[in-house]
Length: 182
Length: 457
Image (cartoon, rainbow over all chains, first blue to last red; front, side):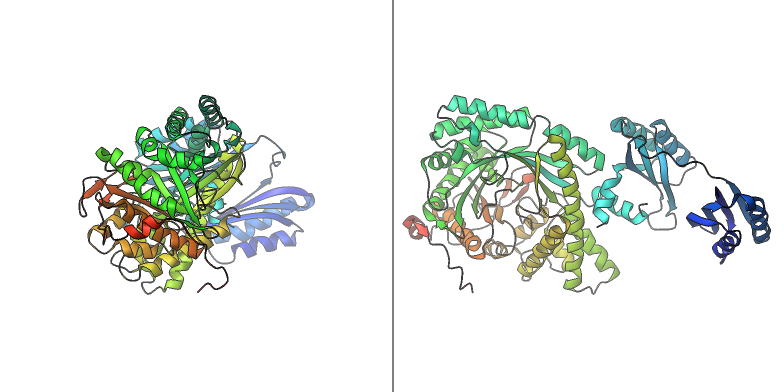
């Protein structure tokens, strides 16, 4: 068996997951992990699959044949090895920005995160432009090195967000979990 | 993965609804500092406090920054000085207060509580000396808070102490006449004082407490008010049961924040974590008011008919939410109704919707008592004592904590403004009905016996 990644992208419609998973099933694959989302009308899914090595080429061909007529693109590649357990301890922080929707804000804020050694594990960017309080909100969940200089990150974010006219907050992930979850 | 709602609602609570950790209070046991030599005693307590609390402010600020929730006050609560300083006379008690004040300034904390004693059944010599020293001690220091427990459900009310406290309050007010009697704002008279209160002016470290402990006081009247507003915006006909449920859920969230931060501060300092005191403690800011909650639920102002019922519901819902959020809820845990410290309550008092008698009735169902009430400067000491006695009776009979923090403002009459500044706020002076009509009763002294525990109607 070989671990592969299947990613599917295209216009959302009913039945995409059923089509993909049935093809995988027919080729004797086992789905280990799926993440699927819809952004506006765009469908995106990423599947981590155990696949018999012998049928990988056939699988790729069948997926393309089934999905391309539906205007869905599909990529199949070998999966990367997961990180070793017990690696570097991290500090999970949540950075939130809120303000006018201006070009480059994702790039600028993520650059600050990169400079501080942060790895973004989740990112949501939500447009609230059609409401009484129009704003574009970004929520980054980030794993920083445990040695992170919190004050320096805050200063860097402060400077960048001031230039972009954004409100920002940076808080330990724990606070959101403990307030909102039992 | 966090949801958008989880993240945004939490940030909203902090940024726009005044969610904060009102106080992280480090309890410090001073019993083993006791000495018959006042200088040795002062050196020992100074060293103990500045040693244990050296990093308190730094650690609190660090965790406030990490979690994005400000810790507004860092405080210390100590063993009652009336007990640990028992050998000393009143002038020495004043110099002990100065030492405590210096220690507080050295470690940069906001207040130090525990300059007090427990005299519900009688006053020992140390207690007498401490009580005598209170007016001067609170005048010459900045950060000392004093409390005197004069009643408990099991002991009754020590009316000798109550009578004494009326005069002490008058003297404390007169000595700080240039600041509207500010010393009285740092002095509480209690019934059933808890051993683990992190809030001032009643904080002290009880005899049954560890040698050092972190107790946390969380506040969030603004968060509760906004939560009620949101419910009523989506359902204007929401019932009181539904509103109570919302208060309970909100109290849960606020308590969880306090527990998380307090536990981390305690771990970092290597100190035992004590309790979370979830009290709706207002500040003199719009949007951070207990009074506004009453208006949100449907009263013109706190103080009008219906207020006691709402306060009972509010207090109960806060306790239920808090108890579910933490297995370590303690202190006062309920709603505070301090007149000068809440813009909205002060407004209700000045427009006549809230009078002293209604305030007293409300204290039967809230977690504190007659708190930060400015009274006319010419109110006789015996009348102050009688007001205290009434409040103590409510606490004693209802098996709950009650307190008075009343300020007879020197040279000012009802309707004039008393201004204390900062978190202590300002308010119009409330009229006292029938001043001077309680002298004979108060001067009898003695002990009002403890109530029967079986027939409780």
